[in-house]
Length: 259
Ligand code: CAA
Image (cartoon, rainbow, N blue to C red; front, side):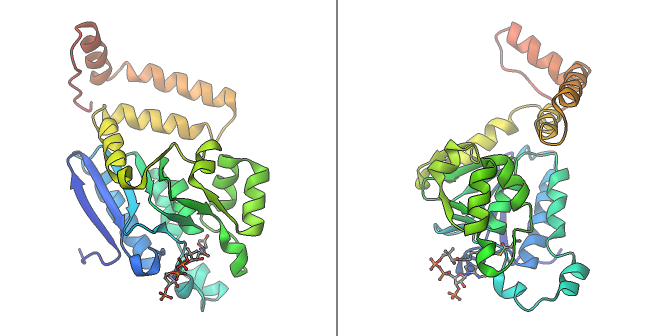
């Protein structure tokens, strides 16, 4: 495999840590960065030792300040169409391993969209969210008009998409875009600890729970409840449900085997 140039990846026990690493460009998403990110997320997803993934940005200023404007500026419609620019990010939706976005600063445009593509967001108190594409004469292209609207509601999403204004971490928490806000200095530790808690659970059961929550955004309530019930019953066909409930009854810690 060719060496990584735009991201860093490391293992922290059962947690895969990916750091977007173009600090001079505020970690802007270049085509290479996106390719490397998707490649490494898929590599962690295929690794049975890894139970959760954290994605963060290098430096203390940005998670990612968007798609790389300078790389996109000369592209024609046909260039974008032929390259399926950023289409690889769709592959993150089929990753089973939970992905936490640890947003350590600006999450703008494609940066906000990448964070929203992850399973949940932990934000530093210094984080800023927004979809400023309108100011560049374009619109969000990685889910901003869809996921942002579902997360914060139509009115505020519409205002931010049409003005390009930013939202504070605290507002993002109040509106449900982010799970929790933590002091910037504690963000990475908190994200790794949270990821560690997930990685300590049964991986197949975690994947089932994740799928069910995601289905809530894709279907009607009645269909979603039916889907959840079927998956709930199917957990009873696993070793780990037996181990988890037996351990509870014996007042012990469960020994999950991921099967
Ligand atoms: N693409 C390319 N380079 C970027 C960038 C981006 N999205 N964001 C920042 N940079 C670069 C700057 O050009 C600058 O480089 P130089 O030092 O070579 O000039 C460097 O990062 C530092 O940025 P600033 O000097 O601008 O830092 P600042 O603190 O003054 O401002 C900021 C910070 C408000 C985040 C500002 O950088 C900014 O507005 N960035 C662009 C945000 C944006 O418009 N994002 C949307 C991109 S389009 C998109 O994402 C489409 C999509 O949906 C897929």
